[in-house]
Length: 221
Image: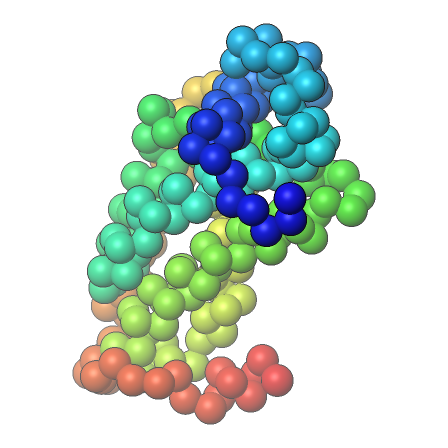
């Protein structure tokens, strides 16, 4: 019935299917993730996949959205508290480095598998866009402390950081050895410790946080 809320049992079944979908992606890869494989992982009838989600692609997109929302709920408060570039890099390393975070592992696998799939790309980007906004807010808060920092293209930098993070995630899982990734984060941390005071030295004393000036706004227009 349209508009009817799912029952508790129905919602619990959907959550079980979503969990099974993520576990199957991690175990079998996106190519091996079929309705039959998901049902075998979760020990339920594969007809439930189509009853609750319509298709495997729709199920995986719902799993991606749920995984993304759960990670944002965990890390958004910490992103909102970041006050400098070294702190932002440290948080990025924590976002990457939690081996127990199955949501992040599944997100990387799904995004990597769908990167070349026509039609689904824009929807995936839209689902991940809130991360750009969170990172952009953190960068504005950091850069607004420095006169010259307030002239930087924050939205473009936020997009670049999100793209770099996804790239590091995918390469790390392909490589299987996290040593190179640890070196990357160490290099980023060193660069951040250099850039943060450099902004002050180039632009004078830090200024109080305030609205981004019109230069950045006109650059995006």
